[in-house]
Image (cartoon, rainbow, N blue to C red; front, side, top):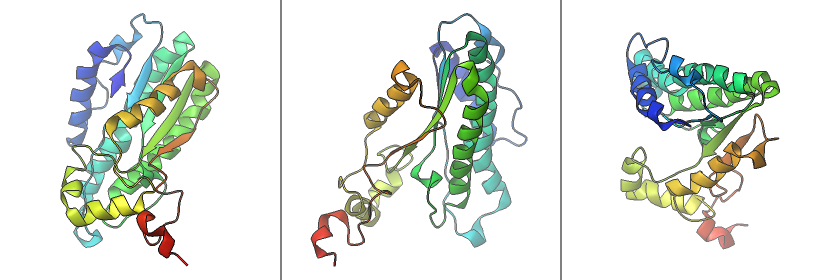
Length: 219
């Protein structure tokens, strides 16, 4: 998570991690402080967790924990930052979804459900807040090299499949999300609201049944 006033970041991160608790806290401790004077406020909702389990092994508690972290947490945080933004008549909220906001994947039942729901939440918030000068958009990253995906990258078979399936032939790197995010937070995107910006190297918008490097084998 990133708040325009960085001193609130630590408190926001601490609260978000507590969302995995039962019951989760209802209100972030920094909410009142957000009403302190500030010219502009930007909120990037980029925290998330994932659990990979077969349907028969996916217990309800684990499913709910993913939803709390990936959906309920972002909802509460958006609710708290929206008020001060509305009072100022300017704000930018960027939720970080996933290509799993658009597609499904085996063993990712809670993750896919939460990211699809985050896309819907983005659109409903954009509808309500847009008239007050607050835009709400969502970035949908593909396969990026992060701590969360390290086990996948360490799996040679999976790593090869990702590279072959992606037209760019590689994983994304974190800084390649900075540009799209900066755009959505800037005045250049003042008329962009409720949008889902996919940043995946073209993975889900192209069709490579034989892998991008073997496209010449396609019929």
